Length: 378
Image (cartoon, rainbow, N blue to C red):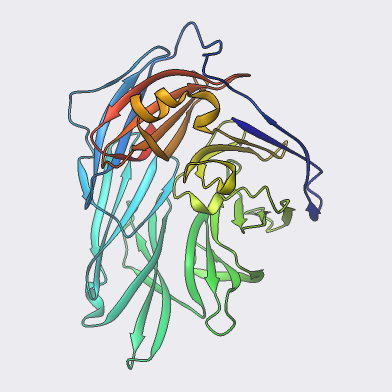
């Protein structure tokens, strides 16, 4: 485990400076919990062309595979996804002018799905991103006109009890990423004339009209909704936290050698204190392509869980056969980091549970017949 502490306050634009750097952890387990909380997980796995699911049962001592088939079943490998808590929307292209989405609540096993864009007839369509609220699904897309020009839209598809017809909202710029917060849709766009220049458009979901647009500079990578229902704009060298109600902004810059790499993780989890759990590329800091990481926004602390710091060569390479981390979540009841990983040279993987403390302690490991894609606590 590598811990990086930053000093400084969130004051408009403030450069973070590293205050300390230390390495912790060893091959010997630390003090884990004596009594564990019971918890169930849904494990989504990449099985090549499909995403499959398994139900897992666990407590503070052991994790096991539930032999009963998981309610979610399988879905085709999606073009892109959007997660808000335990609800995930999957989008798949079905043809040159067709698509389909599935919106699935993994807490209640309630599902909504539909085919879309059939009303456009014969067209050159490219879907670009998806987001959802309780009452709608939003798809960013572009349609080629006259073989040269592309027109961009956000399609708002009502999914609530009131129903309604889809609405297409024209976009001046190309929508790259969508997030829904505080009854507003936030759309990260890229300028088609000035390379890498970005804007943020904010749409009122009640009226499907844009209420503001703002320049974001260059090289914005993605949007994340945080535990406070605010929106994080992620860059390689900084992030901006935008209040989803007032649209006020606070920006934090990173030291060049200590990036957070939020944008590299498709799925992430926040705990009750607002810390972010995700997988990140460690660069030259470790031998693995991706490692589990925790970022605390309040203390400006990032902790990188490097397998080499708390697992022996025998455990990493021969027993668990860890090639890279692929998914992570946080079991708050037991204070466990739950890590999904790919096995070396295989399309299989495993689940590793690690107690988070002064010294990481491995609780157990479970082999699975696929590469972990997402881990959701029921």
